[in-house]
Picture (cartoon, rainbow, N blue to C red):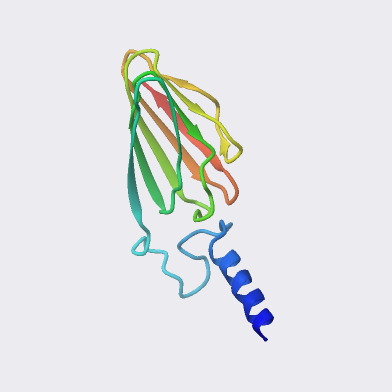
Amino acid sequence: MKNILLVLSVLFATVAFSQSTSPRWGTTAGRDNSYRGLQLKKITVTDEAGADSTTLAPSAYNTLVAVAVLDSFTFKSPTVTKCSQGDEMTLLCTGTSGDKVKFTGTNWVSTGTATLSSGLKAIIRFIFDGAKWVEASRVVQ
């Protein structure tokens, strides 16, 4: 009996904490699709001199990531266990001309490195497709 309860609890935990291929707001009758239950989140990342990196773990419907780039900054493959299809993540990167924002790992589908120009800003938007974060748009000013 104890083994059955252990197996059931492990299965429940695995299902409860894995990524989802359905949107957060639901698609069936009676599910709230009015944006009332969706969460917004802001993450501020600090870049020090030298090659820095971070791994993001977005868990909200819309996540804003603000980073002030000093020279180059690498976003490692993000954790996708609490992501749902349709989630959005926007990177707001500021810095000086020649600073670079890089993406490594398997959970990104990106066009590659963003090099800041004289306008000093890059806005990169990603949408979660149920398995990976796919780059939707990029503006480098």
